[in-house]
Image 1 (cartoon, rainbow, N blue to C red):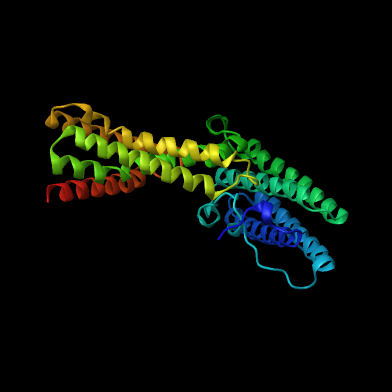
Image 2 (cartoon, rainbow, N blue to C red):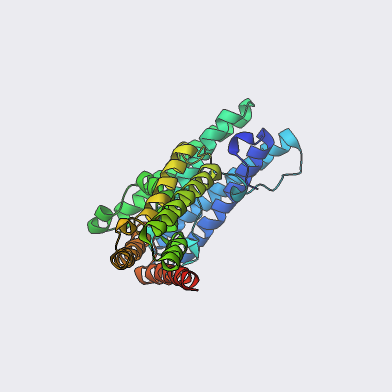
Length: 319
């Protein structure tokens, strides 16, 4: 089970830092391999950054041995709440310079924030100095990643992309809300339409849909709030994120529930089906726009999943 960063001991913080430097170094190595033929100059830059990460790791290991001995516990980023999930873009071939820039900026921003937070948690002066020096190096790495935009990206591409901080904000703040919206829109279809076809009464279907939407909102809200305290990535207060996620989940279910306020059952069911179709199309676009999912792939995933849940509700309600 993932732990909160605030609960880590100084020994565990250093062990985590060693693991982060090793992982970042290996990712930079994959960047070098993917860019060597197309962008040899940029590949050389990432090779130098990889060597720096190796130096950071050696320095951290040395100070760990001085403080805590030879055994370094295995603590990975996925073992601690607050880190951003990384898509393995470094495995894609051909590897585009814009993809590398985005990933490198996010990596360096997150690692710098980690070192800044870690400095607040340690008491040893030598460890604090090392962490501060590493945070400063990460700032320089972030500047190098940003310079790739000037060297290799066209003005048209640069105008379409947000700054690294905004991308991180979208990834960490907007994405949970969108996840809630998608969950509410799809998961409430089965109970709503099962009740509708079982009773053929608009009001009964409305009450079931309302209950399912509110229940899903509460569940998703708590799940988001308890998933990450936001101390490492600046995602904000967990309960604020939970409220946003819960409200979006409820809103996703309410959309196709409201038509059942219409007393005429046939009109209500027709309006609800039409709204479901619009919702699934909108969710496909959202996944494509904000989650870097190809539109056809997003549409297939959302529509197939939504239709299956929709049909399950109809079959259960009609049985």
